[in-house]
Image (cartoon, rainbow, N blue to C red; front, side):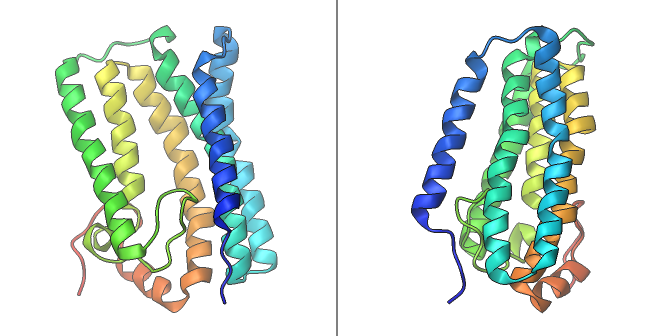
Length: 223
C-alpha cells in the first residue's frame, strides 16, 4: 500500500499553522521589522524548497515524496503565509504610490479572481481527489478542465487574486511586493520541487501531461 500521512498528523500541522496565522496580525512590530518579515520571510522559501528537493532526490520514492511534501507545505505555511498576512494587515502603513484605479474596480477584480481560485480548488477536488496545501495530496493526476489549459491554474489564480487585492487597496507597493517577492518564491517552489514530486508520484502520465500543457500561461488544450 502506498504511504499517506495520517489524518491526525495533518490535523495537528494544520492546527499549528492556523493558530500562528491567527495571532500574526496582532503582533506589534516596528515598521522596519515588519518589512523584514514581509520580505525576508518570503526569501526563506528558496532555501527551504531547495533543501526539500535535495532530500527528495536522495531517495526519490513515492512514500518519501508524500512525507517530504507534507512537511514542506507545512514550512511554506510560515514562509509564505506569515508575510502575506502581515502584508494584508499592515499595507496601509506602507508609504508609496497610490494606484489611480477606483476601489470598486479593484473589489470586482478580487471577486472574479477569488471565484477563479475557488474553481481551481473544485477542479482539483473532483478530478484529482485532493485539496490545496497538504490538506489532502491529490490521489489522481488532475489533467482536464482548467488543468488542461495550464498545469498550474491554482497558482495563476492565486497570483491574480493577490494582485487584485493590491489594486483594491490602491497600493502600488503591495502589487510590486506580489510581483517581485511572492510570485518568484511560489513559482520557484512549483518548478524546483512540485514538478519533481509529481513526476515521482504519477510517473509517465505526468511527464506526458507536462509535455503537452504549459506551466503557467494558459493555452488551448492539445488533443
